[in-house]
Length: 334
Image 1 (cartoon, rainbow, N blue to C red):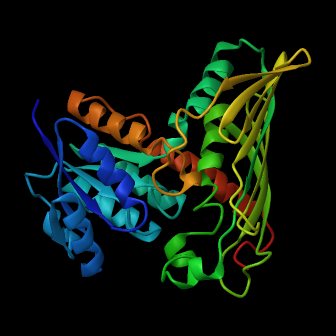
Image 2: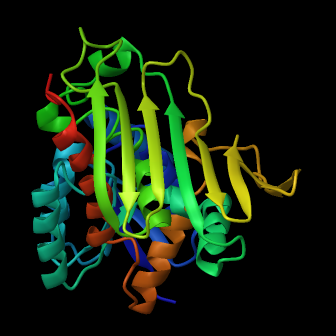
């Protein structure tokens, strides 16, 4: 098996999940890390036994690097992805693929013309409950899906935004709670529901209005073309990071996701279907445990020459939901 060389750009909080996934694989090697902060880059390089760079452009075109991981601020995802795809590298980027739908469509065109692949990190699709929910919907074992909801109540402090130069700003984050924290839940709702007929919603800045330009709270009603109704609520204005809650009502039963456990409510009885395989979580608990599964699958697709399924087109779908919420909200930029 030939070894795939990898590089990680951005040595922030999410980078260790990518590094450890790479190091866990046979036939993969972390060659370099890059960050504009030399201290961060040097520390990461020391931890992972690789090269440290402060200028990511030095990685472009290097033949010893096949896959580039983008763990950078949102506004850098699209331009960096374009550069590396045009140079023939495979790119795996953290969400979102871009700040908005038009920019994402541009990256989709670049990826289509590249010999490299573009993958988007929507790791929650690899969660065991998510897989079970999707199988239940597709199989029809509980009849038709009627409606579903997703609730995200998390906490972000003033310091979270103040210590970063890019968070909380339209130009660099692309939005607030919608595009950063709850985009994963919105992605799951659209993945489960299928093609969307309409999106309406509202946004507000309930707690952090003196700190950020963007919203910290949002609500949406999503109507799918199959007449399924999806309701969504997300906020960064809670006092703790509560586990995401989801519910799926079928003709013959209800699936409920609570604390990463999936339950079936049917005929007056509740049955546990799936539970977390481990309580050990790398990074923050609310990130889930599926980064490694997604990264390993991306490498498998690259190695086998198969198209990775969470590509630019899939990344656009969640951005379209977010755009729909903003477009129907009153004064979304206030």
